[in-house]
Length: 111
Image 1 (cartoon, rainbow, N blue to C red):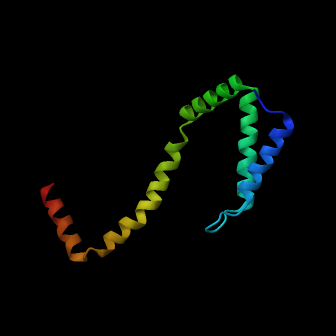
Image 2: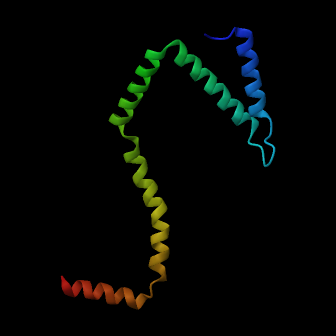
Image 3: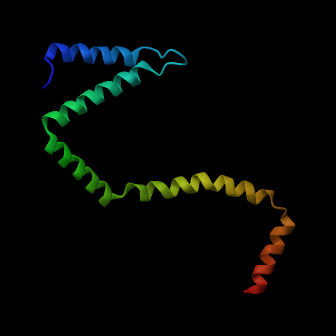
């Protein structure tokens, strides 16, 4: 059984007040971020309560679209290359030049 609307409103306001108040020990997160998270949580909760089947259907559709589109394939490769390339170049520059010529010369003799 759900509580009356007045009690739900008071409980919601109290949760918001607690979320926006700074913590006892440490730096407080941005109030706007906490407010946005609380509002999104409340809106999603209401949507799920009112339309549970539509919410499940929308989640399944979004998952199917993501699986079909596969955005991680295009995003992952450039990100890995951009992150790994500077590291590889730094490592390559640490190797003495004579060693490179020896390594490349040995490889060409094997081929």
